[in-house]
Amino acid sequence: MRVGLIGAGTIGTYLLDELSRKNDQDIRITSVFVRNLEKYQHLEERYGVQLYTSVDEFLDSSIDVVVEAANVQAAREVLPDIVSEKETVLISIGALAEENFFNKITEIINEKNHRVHLPSGAIGGLDLIENVTEAGIIDTLSLVTRKPAHTLLSEPTDETKTVFEGNAAEAIEQYPKNINVSIALALAGVGLQQTKVTLLADPNLDKNIHSIQVSGDFGTASFEISNNPFPSNKNTSYLAAVSVLGTLKKMTKRINIG
Image 1 (cartoon, one colour):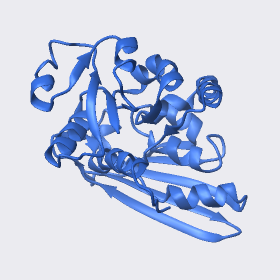
Image 2: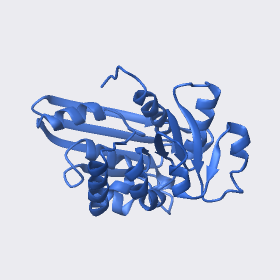
Image 3: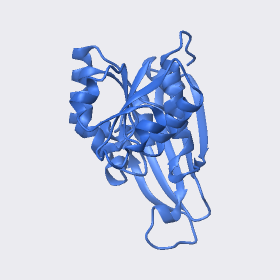
Image 4: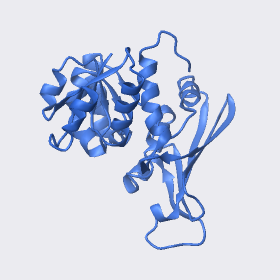
């Protein structure tokens, strides 16, 4: 499977490193779309990839699937063109929070018969949530995210403070860089309006902690994920990067779990 990569930041570089180090024959990154050719020119020699600054030329470069590893703004700009032509792995899932844009992408992939894969990112348990939602046996879904206080507050605090309480749609609008996981959770479950979200600023934390609660006719379930930051970038969850690699691996397997 030949992969085209959009973006060469923390997650993009992680994928290049991992796939190159393991010499994976099933998955190869062959093309990389960037805004600044000079800045990333070294990637061509280091990883044996071809850089592109034109979306059209990038899509014409004999790739099978595109991995978006940039940011929400970039995803909104290029995603309609990407999903029109290729199967896509979308990391910046917050791009789908806007209803009109989500509907537009859905129309395109239905018309083109393409698929968009959404990695689980910094959380887990989405398979269970998606299953009970499809079966119509889910009643409530909630997320409580605790983050280091200094990442959410401009002033120091000695106590944990609730900085947001509402639904996922409101959460991503007010905190677009801090609560992307709520969008994955909502899309797997009961939707943006019905997914309850609480965001806490905790002065005693040095990592993000996501607590998920789901209930319905099936029973109840709870998940807590404590995320270590990526070694080279404290603003990126290590698990988020790993989930993208896992998604690509799953796409090449004949037997899938979950």
